[in-house]
Length: 102
Image 1 (tube, rainbow, N blue to C red):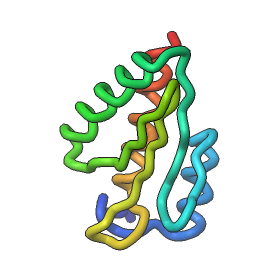
Image 2 (cartoon, one colour):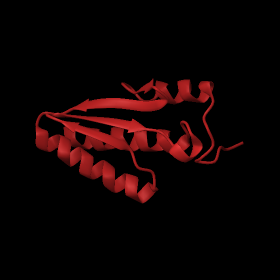
Image 3 (tube, rainbow, N blue to C red):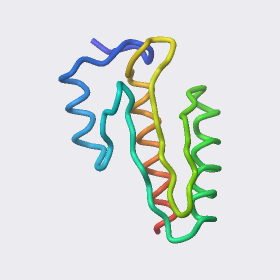
Image 4 (tube, rainbow, N blue to C red):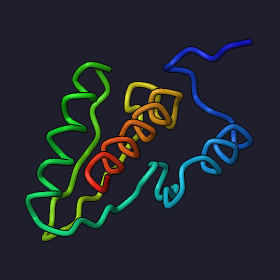
């Protein structure tokens, strides 16, 4: 059975998803990771790339931009928790970060 993108993930599903998302943690019911970059502008490029993907998916993260770092916080507010949409956007964030380091 396939989950809808707005159905809450079980603890087992979250553990499995986190295994494929290095550095991501669950904090206060949100999926969170802080990325470090070589420069401030690399962080801004990451935000721009992730924002474009988030807009396409219709699922928007909370982003905290600092000097050479960006913290991404994900949750599905309408579902009051974590859903497959959050895992999908975390995967997109990983791709965005990897493209800047390539």
